[in-house]
Length: 125
Figure 1 (cartoon, rainbow, N blue to C red):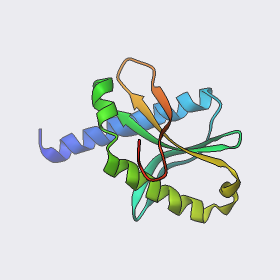
Figure 2 (spheres, rainbow, N blue to C red; figure 1 turned 180 degrees about the vertical axis):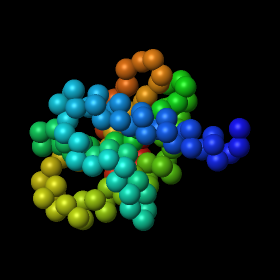
Figure 3 (cartoon, rainbow, N blue to C red; figure 1 turned 135 degrees about the vertical axis):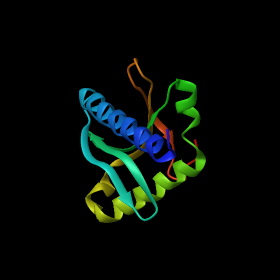
Figure 4 (cartoon, one colour; figure 1 turned 90 degrees about the horizontal axis):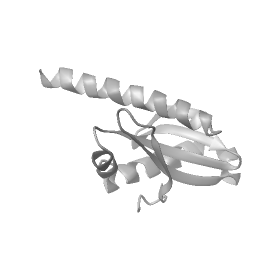
């Protein structure tokens, strides 16, 4: 299979996982504020809110939980934190909320695993 087809298939699986995770978080009482929020410095898969908390969520879908957990790298976490700063600059009303960075691990055939507060605003775990 050509590299472009492999990339497209991975992109499709990632999009499906993000859709599944968005529904899963809704069932947990979260409201989706944004999906695939893109900035010049990075992308945030989901931005969700529940109560007075806004969470910037990275979705990692892999064949195994270990692979998915390892995929949330420091570089990627920093990119998400920088993108969150852009989102916050455009949504000043969010300043009064508790902010959190979450990771949701998605593995085929299992419920997603939501790791609330997986890293901080600097990207450190």
